[in-house]
Image (cartoon, rainbow, N blue to C red; front, side, top):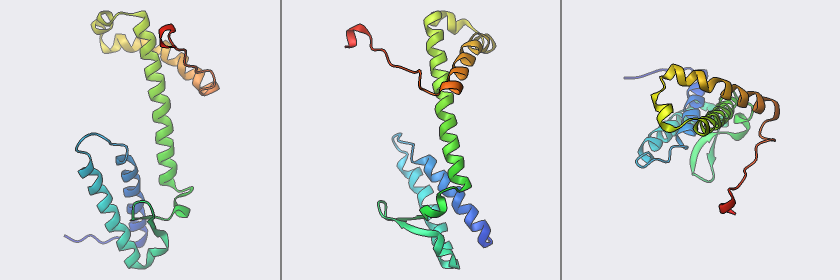
Length: 154
């Protein structure tokens, strides 16, 4: 099977694969190395094809990994880099709010009480707590977030 890409489509594909590779680098679960390598190898193949097609000015060798990558200058301000940064930021805030809300619910209810709740009931009691944290973090970021050690933890 042969696929034909325009030069522009090849660039888009390399951006998509770069984004996918960045996501796979966060996977540290046992056995993930093969999956990461497959993505990495595919990106290498596409970047090598770009060099062959006369688009080598967009490609450089990563000195740390000794693999091809899109040039850093090209990456800065690119749509795929912006998308990745936005995804990471949104994931951080969503995870922080979810964990903080869960902690508050765990203080207010026993595990048995929470297990008895339906998904809709749980969402209903979590909503005001979640909204409280979204409002706080939207207004102040993490400026008012502090870690208070338990007395016996020092």
